[in-house]
Image (tube, rainbow, N blue to C red; front, side, top):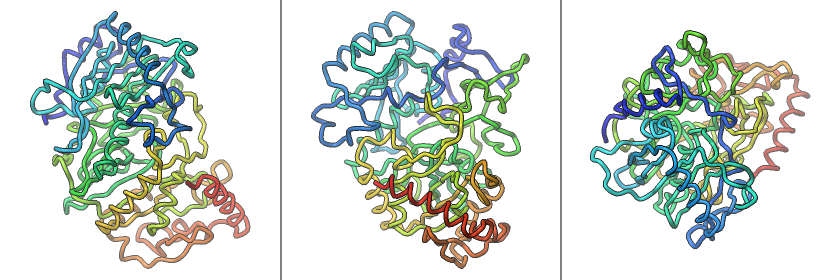
Length: 490
């Protein structure tokens, strides 16, 4: 692979000359994505064919499109693509020497192709042939009635033709998640667990995984100046270790600060692309301004993170962290999970939407459940991924911890407060270093969770929410959450 910082300066200049975006004071390209400032899960489809028929968990997030309808849609979208300038590259998704795919990317916006260069992997040698073909015909809005679609956008995966079509949306995250979804479907057949998680490792080589939905802290907590970043969002876990699917990061910008997230702050420079970030009259980003969307974003190459891990494949994790943002305020800031609990929490995927990445989800904070901590991206039945996760845990002895980055001492909007980032960082540090394994644990009921009795630097009343709440109110509120768990259990 070549250094991911070597993005095309020609594409950067072309995007500016085309007025696709403007230059911010930090050197990054700022673009606006129009009406759609997040993913459009209701507009995502999988071609139902001999490959997918028996393997996809159809219904819900996994909507079917017939091969003949897709072929007509593909041809019309490609005709639209050809009527505008096309910006192309050939890239790799997956850093593993064996478990990766190659893709030819064609886009009508220079910044979309630049986004792919930042986020995917540039091979050491130019690719003469590729396995997959991704077309982003952003200008084309299909006739929903003609094709049986839900709206004027479409994201379609075709596994027999090895094609991905994206049209009717300017939001670049659709390209990232489409290729993630492709690997998520393919890799289990090769005994590889695809994961919606971040990963980093210490100087001792110990690796930690951070599962979680957007807004729970994957990017923030994995970008630790004391550890080497492997990646912030998408990884595979094979029999020989952990590997990144990507060559870049796609981080949220909302309320970003240099003190709180110094590595991300410094990575936003020339070569980076900011989506929907508000600029003042001098081009200075206002990361606190959510007037366009809470889902403001920046993409940058991994090489913009100093000291990032360089290996293609990394050692098996010692620790796995499930990040949840609890709005009820009844879950502890940290708990150790046994394998049965791992399956339960993995299948439930409980957290909150905080500045949702989904188009039409609104700006508020609300409870959500997403199996595998990323249901829209996993086409197979969730239990297949859960079984492969537990298999890897048994093979490696990695321990799993539930870390609540949400509210404590009360519910959201009802007297509770969100755990300070410094407290969460202290807990994560105890997990990654192995310090937490030396703690004494006690049971937290009614969740039957093992929680540390004490941890240096963290108040005992923070560790055990039952010590802060009124006993009756805590029992009642915890019961409400457990009822939701039961309703969403796979």
